Length: 372
Image (tube, rainbow, N blue to C red):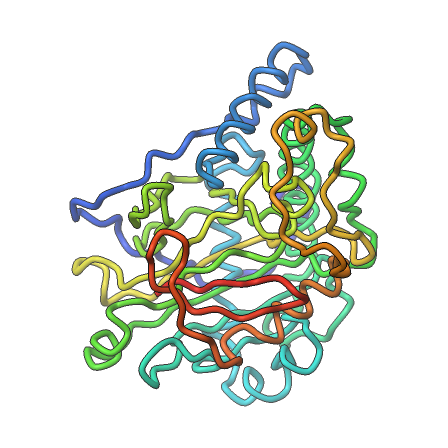
C-alpha cells in the first residue's frame, strides 16, 4: 500500500473465477476519473455531463482510473477477508457485534441470520463495519495490525473518489462544485464507513422459499455507495422498464450508486436506484462472495431538504419525498431510522404505481419500499 512500510502479512484471498453464464447485463456507463487529472475545465464539464446523465438515467455507473492499482485492490480484499476467516464466532456475535436496532449504527458486525428475507428464511451474510475514524470502536485482534491500511483506504475513497464524484454531480445541478463536498467532511461527525461483507451459499430449501433472492430490492440510505467490483455475479438493478438486470464485473473498477440522501438533496433529480442480491449462476454457487464497500453519508447535522437554489431544479421541478408539514430529517435521523428498522420490522404488502408487488414501511414520515 502506498505510504505504508512493513505492512503485516495475511493469507491471499483467491476470488471465484468470473462466471461463464450468459446473463442479461445492465448497460451501465463508465466514468474515467483519470481524465480529471490535468485540471482541464473542458474535461471536467464533459465528465460532469456523463455523470449527470448516468445518475439520472440509471442511478448506477462504473468508475475506472480511481487511483488504486490492481495489486492495491487485491490487498484490500485480502484484508476484507480477515474479519470473517480469522475471528471467532464468539467475537462476531458478542464482543464486537453491532447494536443496530438499539443505536441505529452499523459499526461492528452484522451477524448472519439477523435479517428476515422471506418465508421464515433469514439471511446468510455477515459484514463488518468500520467508521472512517477507526478509533471510534475497538476491533478484533486479528484486524488491529491492518487499521493503518484501512484508514488509508477510507481516506482514499473519501478524497480521491467520493469528493470528485460529488463535484461532478453538483456541476450537473449547476451548483457550486463544493456544494456536496462541504456536506461530507472526513473529520466531521457522521457514519460514513468501510464495510467488508461476505455472502455464504444457502440450502436448496432456502433458495426455494425465497425464490433465490438473497437480499430484497432496496435503496441505500446514504448519498453515494462505492463498491469494489468482484467476480461473483449476484447484484441486480431494477431498470426503468421494470426488469431486473445483472451488474457485470469489471476488473479493478468501482460500482457507484446513489442513495436516498442524495435523492432527497437533489429533489429527485438524482435517483436512488433499487437493487438486490440473488443466487449466483451455477458455476459460482460453491463460492463465497466477498465485498469491499465505502458507504458515504453527509455529516450527521445536514438536513436532507432539496437544494432549491439549483437552477436545474428550478427548471425541472422537485419530486417531493416529505409531505408538507413533515419535519425533514437530518442525516443522523434518517440513517438511524433506516438502520434500526431494516430486516426487523413488520412490512405491509402493497402494490406500487406500476402494479408491482412491494412491501412497505414508513420511516421518518417517508414511504420506504422493498422489492422481492
